[in-house]
Structure formats: structure tokens, C-alpha cells
Image 1 (cartoon, rainbow, N blue to C red):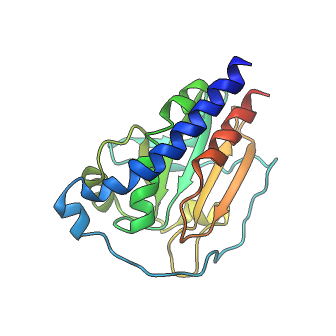
Image 2: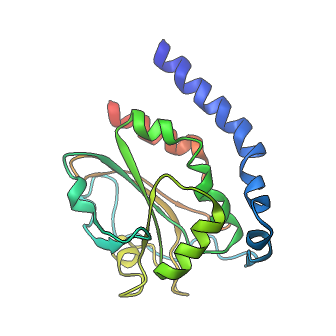
Length: 202
């Protein structure tokens, strides 16, 4: 009963916060607001997945904004992992989506999970963007070179060279437990990710 109540409270809190907190990101600084590039409506999905739920998640090693190299395999047997691919820095939906994960940091901790944000942008671009965005608790990785190689491995590299807006939940055994290749024009609902993380305990 306590678990159910806790999850319900988290969802209610998110529903309130999504409306009140995330749009305010644009007001964090004038520089950030003025440099958001409006891309307009895009084709919702423009790729074909190379993996499915139940598959072993493809391993990779990518550089992070903080300077170290991160390999998926180094967390096998230690942590559940969430990969958040977003299309591009300095765009509206992406600039809203990642700060939203600050709201559910506790949910990641309760489910022994870590999060990695991934784009095909280079490190200097990601450094400038995330600094303007505000403090993020998770590592941001660059899939810049070979361009989009990790996105391509998972099957979420679009024909224009950016990645899909996609989420992958990987358990401690390295198995894919949840995949959401979302409409690129929309932010994935936080409650769906919360449910996927809660299922890792079952």
C-alpha cells in the first residue's frame, strides 16, 4: 500500500511540475531564451529500430561533457540504465525534456538506475547548451563521431543525421526492458518512464 501511495504522489507531483517548472527553463537566462532554434514540425519518426525489448543492449563508449569516457558495459551487474536520445541541442522540446528529469531524480535512485543523455552534437556545443539549461544531475554524452554511430546501432538515426527522441531502459543484466521511440515533436510523458523504472523491481 505504501508503495502504491508513493508512486501516486510522484505522478501527481509530476503533473503539477510539468506545467509549472519546465516551461520556466526558457526564462532561466535571456541568452538561453534568445538562442533556442525553432525547428517547426518534423516527421514524427524517421528510422527503423535495430533492437527490441528482450534483446541485449548494444554496448558503446562515448565521451561525456564532463570529460570522461562512458561505456554502457561498465554498469552491467551494477546499475539499471536509461538512455535518453534527443535530436539536437538548442531546440525547444529537447531543452524542455532533459530538465524535466530533475523532477524524478528520486525515482531513478529508488530503482537503482542512472540516466545518460545522448545527442549527435559535439562536446563544445553540448557544454554550452547544458550550461545555459541549468544544472542536470545526469551525464550528457556526445555521439558526434563517428557521426551518430550509437544512434545508428540502436536504429534511431534519422535520415537528416540527427537522432530520434527515444528512451531505452536497460536492466542490470544488460537487457532492454522498455523502448519508446517518441514523436520527435513531443516530449515523452514522465509517467511512462516512471512506470518502466518501477517494473525493474518486479
